[in-house]
Image 1 (tube, rainbow, N blue to C red):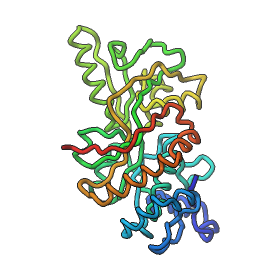
Image 2 (cartoon, helix red, strand yellow; image 1 turned 180 degrees about the vertical axis):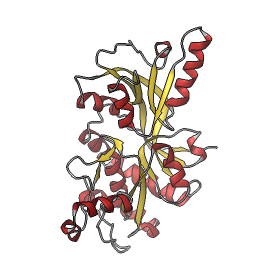
Image 3 (cartoon, rainbow, N blue to C red; image 1 turned 90 degrees about the horizontal axis):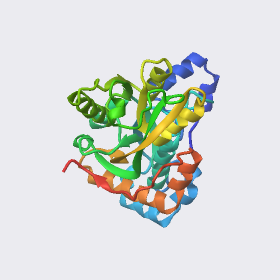
Amino acid sequence: MRIRQLRPVLATLASTVAAAVLLTACGSSDSTTPADSTAPAGAAPYASLAASPACAQLRGQHPDLAGKKMTNAINPHTPGYESISVSDPNRYEGFDIDLGEAIGACLGFTVSYLPVSFETLLPTLRSGQANFVISDIYATRERAASADFITYSKVFDGVLVAKGNPKKLTGIDDSLCGTTTALNKGFVEVPLVAAQSAKCTAEGKPAAQASLFDNNADCVQAILAGRADSYINDVNTVTRFVKDQPDQLDRATAVTLPYSIGIGVPKDNTAIRAAFTGALTEVQRSGLQATLSKKWQLDESAIESPSLVTAS
């Protein structure tokens, strides 16, 4: 995995200064000097990918990307996908981090990071503060009003519950009636739970409540504190939390949703869209996406050939 370190000179500064750097530099620990347009920037960890004829051709077709630093907006609270490194708080790690770095190696750019709340990922992209979003985000038609998406994986949700599943939850169904689900603000599951709540009350049952938080970690803490009965998200994320705290958490079930996970890019920017689609296609063709999924224990990922999701 390619996660770049802070410049050696920063290592001599006080730890408080290092922390400030993390906050003020958009969370990036990048210190790579941008390469010229003839060589892929930061390609070392993905040298074989960058050297492939397909990537070389893509760099020739998109010379304006070579040597640039591109910003990825992330919500770094999803272990396995994107999170702050346990061993080094000045670094991000996970599948999505690696995927963005691999695409950058193929196209010749380096990556910096802008950590934001999940609900502000797309507004951040739309405002121009970020160049793309790779942050375990589901590519829906509604979200495509703010960004174009290039899909790379199918969606399977899991339902996280307290150990033993005391409320006997079985998915986004009547079992949620009278319970509270912790959800991230902006999640596609929010309206799904709201629709189930309306169904509960129409049947004369207690409503299905939703408690909204800014990140996944807070959702899990709500279950551990007894303030929520469940949390619904990508099944690999749910499984990861169970592995981390097997004495306190369980996975109730898996739910298939009609969505795909995608890379968000600026709307109607056909050049960026084509470049990322081409690079992602080569990442999949080379087997790298499967390798990264295994590396980050995304055991229930289902690779999907790149397709475009737009609002139209």
